[in-house]
Length: 147
Image (tube, rainbow, N blue to C red; front, side, top):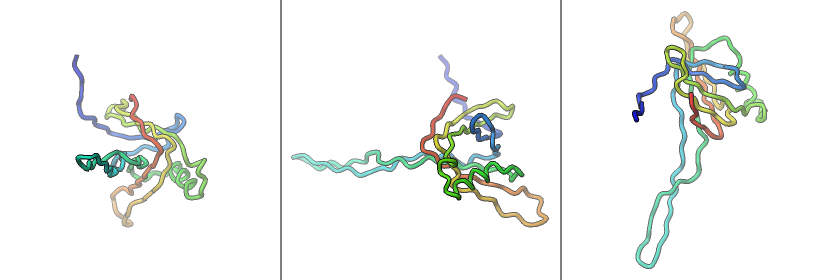
């Protein structure tokens, strides 16, 4: 049996909520999941045993970047967080990674996600570069699922 473990490449990333793609991105800065290590100390008659054990899990984060568009979906979602509308702001969504031919190559499901940070980059008037927008999503749990 042959297993294909080629590295994934992606040309585009999208966030989908309730079957509707609310935003498309050109860059995935990172997906972070982390569990804090805690010290554990025990002893018996012969020795003291020191170990590191898994502790509290930190909320997973996803950081995405794109050229700023005229769409207001991300801003409206972030505004619900700023307004304290927690029940409206927390949405389960999919992060889909697409190949250059538009085929999904990877998918992550984000449970109860919300945009913790929305940043619009610096731009000089008259400059020809693209205005960039970065969003940091925080979620309760992250699951890798089939594309």
